[in-house]
Image (cartoon, rainbow, N blue to C red; front, side, top):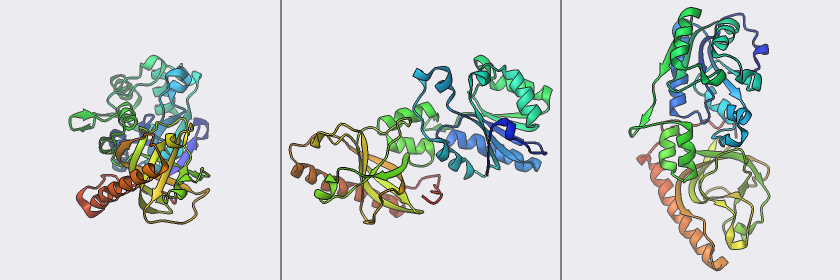
Length: 325
């Protein structure tokens, strides 16, 4: 998949073919359906499939105080989109000038003009352009005039509830990883480099990898989780705590991962930690001995849960390719 940043760098002499339009934070099952529809339309026409997205999040420009934490940083979003068979990811900088552009003008000059799109796919609730005037209905009408077909993808429902990025943020923030997994089609995850920690886990008999956290991302509820961690295209089961380590008077939020079956040196390495299930909230223990006993219990619980999953009693719908992490 080619990644092109900025419309000025779009130099293709052939039409864009089928364009999936949206921000696609999380690349959840609703987004996957939109992109899959676009890719299929491109194949039927013998043309390219293009995902047209924006950076940063529009609210980060229009109302910074209201901008939501992200489900996926750009690199993660691009990796997930690539796995869906897209030919080109076109990223437009979201600026005040772009926000002020009339939706009809965007449809005419960008979609029909510069990209020469033959087909455009959007979600049922997507809007674009000045004041959000570019609704699916308006885009469909403009497409008839400008020569491109429009497919509006209805909501993807899980247990009767529409999958959305805003719903996912709430699920992850409250630690409901099972439902978040059903919305995403894969477990929620955090990717980051292993940094030096206080090494208290090693002293307790449970060495941990401290994974860096990015403040712009939505973070899981503080507490202990059964996790699966990807490193060099292999996954390792384990247990993790995200919190401030209150037993030792900690104040900085951190993610600590203990692996069951890996003991190598990971400092400076990049990991992807998948949150499979919430086990318990973080709490303060009267002593290090009591904390150690609880960690032992957490590890047993996580091992049992992950063993059941590995035995095939439950499996995700979306297989993640870690891209060489």
